[in-house]
Length: 388
Image (tube, rainbow, N blue to C red; front, side, top):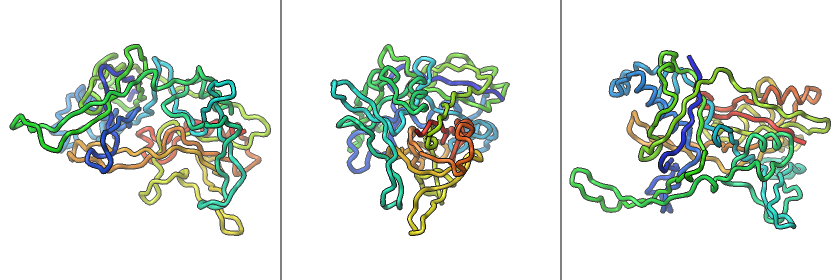
């Protein structure tokens, strides 16, 4: 088996349909998700690999001859994926952490600040600590439509705010392009009444080097040897063209871990990719396997569990609203059930359950770990930062 990095760059517009239905109440226009769900990208990748292997897709739908390594839209067979990640040229970008705020300082310049975790308060969750403002300028709010460079992520992991030049803004690379369409009856070559619709495509600026990347593992050597270094694929709604670069990966890259200092309270776990946290089939916000710990009054004070054999006390959480993801089931030719995912950039503030254990060793053990469901799809990958 071999590993490759697949990098997708737009040729025309792209459209990655949001989970809402056209006919849902209040839907006047369907937006486009970006970056798209990993299942959308893997659908294009699996089709390309299957074509290269000479698969008869009519037989595949019923006999699953290549299922063991190629999988289907529900499971990836022998393959696994890390991503999707965004790249600016060949430099990786990261989701902005949920504690990062932007406001206007006294000098009329944009100023960044971070939420801090306050003292425990009585809430519907129990007697727990919640995020609160930390000397933020008036009007500060969470950043949206922006990503961090590697240098910006390193500053955040060290407990600092990134600098302005360490942010990449979506508006500098992508414009929204509204489209108007109508359903058509191909048999009679006439329009269908009541099927007028609006969608919002993504138009990439002509000088943009923004790309979507996937690290793919598990492709058989005999197929990987025939992969081109550059190709084109149809991607997303309406099968729009994507320029794809494929490069082999020979070893996993080890990310830098911040150095802790005396006085650090604990560590922050950040979701680098979406998380699928389920309990009894229901979506949850809490780290999988963590259970509530209550005080003498029966009020929850924190949650406790372990990741990679590191016993942790989950003290607080900062996160954006969950992502809603649907899709199309090609085999059964019907929409997939819409599911919720914890958004990338979500933060989990943790202390070590054993205060005598080394905090630096915990950071090194936890960075790059995955939590939750669908890990073969790249879900739930963690980065770590200092909690000062």
